Length: 330
Length: 258
Image (tube, rainbow over all chains, first blue to last red; front, side, top):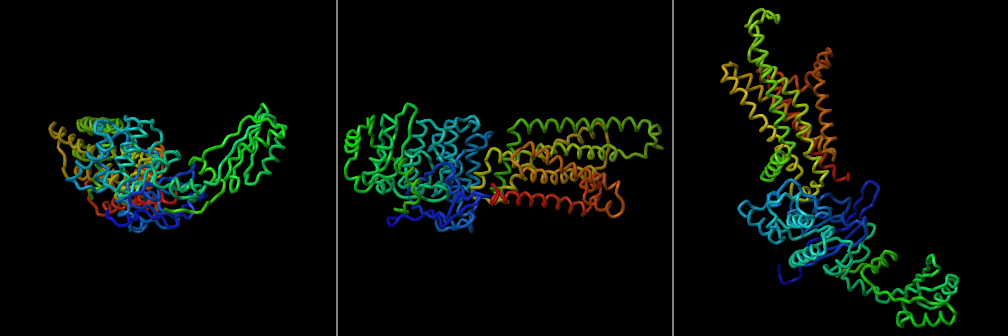
C-alpha cells in the first residue's frame, strides 16, 4: 500500500464467545497486518473455527470487539464483510450449480459491478485453475476442485483480508502443494489467516503462528521465536531392558540436576521407557554419555538412549502442558 | 436490490435444476387439468337436465361460478400439498448442505437473503400459474362463456393465497435443517389454517366470527365469487408479511443458537 508501516487489517479486542454451556473463546486479542500470513494452530475444538467464523461475520462474539481495517464489525458488518473473503472448513457449495454460474452469483452478492463481473470471475477462475471445469456442476467436481472453487469464491471482490479455515484438509499431496502456493502468492499484499492442525504446514506457510488451546492464545510469534523460547529444553528418551531396574534408574535420573518431568512406562516384554526433559545447567552438556555411564555403573542394561529434536509439534505439546508461556507478538 | 434479485434468480432456477421442481410442475398441471376437465364435463351434464339435479331450470346455475368457482376451491386444496414441497428446500436444504454459512458471510443483510428467497419461490409459483390461463383459452375456443371479472379475481386471489402459504412454508423451512421435517411442518400448519374454515361453520357467535376472520379460505372465497374487498387484501398482506418477519427473526437467532 505505502512504504511506511503496513496497515493493521485485523484486530481482535478481548473477544469471547460462549455457546450454551461451552466457552469457545476467552478474551482473545491479536492483530494482523497487511502482508502477513498468520496460522492458527490448535487441536480440534480449540476455538480456531469459532474465531474465524466471528471474523467472517457468521456470528457475533459474546463480548469483545472485532475490527477489520478501521471498521467495527458489530457496527458496520456490511462494510466489514465487503473486504473479507472466507473459506469455511467444509466447503459446502450448491451442488446443482455450475462452477462459473456459482462464482458469478457470488460476485453479484459481493457487489462486483455488472460491467466488470465476467472478467472478474474469469480472472479468479484462471488464478485458481478452474477455467476448464467452469461448466461442470459443482456436485460432480472432485474434492480438490471444489476446494479451489471455494478459494475462488473467497477471492471474488478482491478482499484485503482472507480467512481460510483448514484450506488443505482432504486434499492429496499435489493439490496441497498447489493450494499452498496459491496462499503464499495471495499473502503478498493481504492479511491472511489460516487455520490448520498440520504443524509443518504452519511452519512452511506462515510468517507467524498463534497457538490456540481451549479458547485461549497460548503463544504467538514466528516459528523461530517460538522455538527459541524452548531452546534450553530438550527431551531424552531412555529404554532399559529390565523392569526391575526401573526404580533404581528413576532415582539415578532424579539425582542429575536439570532433569524435569520424568516419566516411565513399561511394555509387555518388560522393556521400560523413561522420558524426561532437561533444562538449565543440564542443557549445556549432552546428557546422553553421562546417563549411559551412570546406568552401566549400576548394572542397568540400556537398550537405547535418544535425544529428540524439537519440532513445532513438540513446542505445541509442551505449551499445552505448561499452560501460558507469555505472549510474544512480532 | 441487485443482490435480492441475484438470490431470487438462483432460487428460481434452482427449482428447475432439480427433478423435484419439474415433477411438481408437471403434477400440478396434470391434476389441475383433470379438475378443470371434470368440472367442465359435469357442468355440461347438469346443464342438459337441470331438473334431475334438483334445479328448477338452467338459468339457476351460473356457468362461471359453477366451473371456475369450484375450480379455484379445488386448487386451494392442491396448494396444501404444493406449498410444502416448494418451500421445504428453501432454508432447510441450505442448512443441511451448510451453504447458508457462506451466504451469511457475504455483505448481505438478513432481509436481502429472506426477501431474495421469498421472491424466487414466488417467481416459481407465478410460473406455475401462467399456463393455467391456457385453460381459459381452450375453454373460450370450445365456445364456453364466462365473466372475466370473477375469473381474473379468482386468479388474483389464488396468487395471494399461494403467496401467503409460501411465506408460512418458508418460515417453517427456516426452523429446521431437515427438508422432510420442513415439508411436514408446513403441511401441518396449512392444514390447521384449512380447518379454521370448518370450525367457523360449527362455532357460533363471537368464535364463528373470529375463525372466519382468521381463515385464509374464507378470504379467498370472496375473490372467487368476484368480490374485491380491501379487508381480504389487508388480510393476505398481513399474513404474508407476518410470516416474512418471522422468517427474518428465525434467521437472526442463529447468533445465539448453533
